[in-house]
Image 1: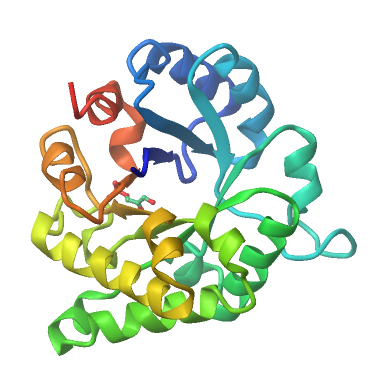
Image 2: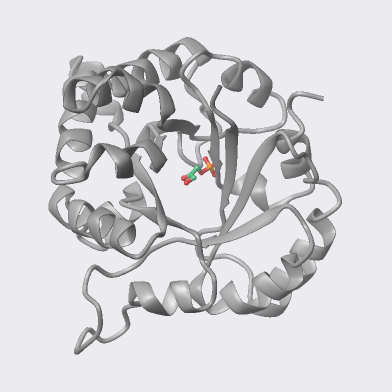
Length: 249
Ligand code: 13P
């Protein structure tokens, strides 16, 4: 039985002091031991967020990482900088990074391999545009993204990965995929993992849905067989996140 994992992606929001205040506010609201709860915060807020989350069920993750160990990469964050302060999760290949910061399936694969090398769990994002959905190529597109992201990743590593299916047209638009649309793609992702590895690996990997998840739609989405939680943007910055995490109560 896969444990649900519900993560907030804070994107470029909240100063470090605002981050501490928000965590203190949300801490009692997100207490639910049946779910893994992760707050992925901007790099500058990782350390104060860790401090604020101490003693709670919240794990602190971040939103990006570079695929080299160190060196002349101005502005980037190395994996051992993250592990040094206890980061366990990193979002990789979010569609905003692909669109605005030139991330490709190849850089996603390099980052995924590097995260595993350092014992950080990658939350690997994939998703189609509205045009691709209308063209009927969604599943082909997602399968390609997954196949490239997992190149040279072992089955043992893949079992521990998290995949976030985030249709780009549903991000920040208030336009959620229906639970059937989300389940169709999440099931196809699990099928793709079974093809690359085996059924046991596919049965263990956790697949989230992301894109306008809110307190009103979380329970229906998370009830689907292949949806193991959510990656939540806007609603993760509000007390509403508590209701999302406690979708099963
Ligand atoms: P919203 O929940 O704001 O639509 O954002 C989704 C997302 O991009 C999470 O990574």
